[in-house]
Length: 69
Image 1 (cartoon, rainbow, N blue to C red):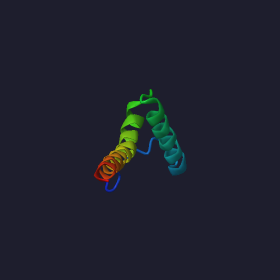
Image 2: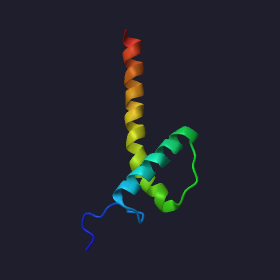
Image 3: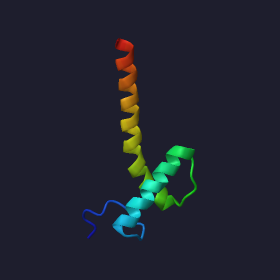
Image 4: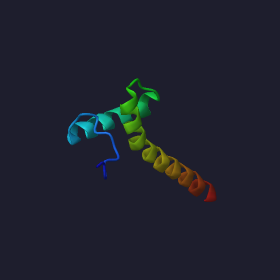
């Protein structure tokens, strides 16, 4: 049974997977486009989208806060 096995392990240890996703995320943010496999892209999407959402909320809040002064 596949209970609690939501993410793809990508055939790597936890530390290697964490480092790889962090490096891919930073490359994606810097260069706005990277070339990778579909499986890695799907794993990276789960990793990066919450970061982008938090970033946009901070930017919106800072813009609103600056305009109210």
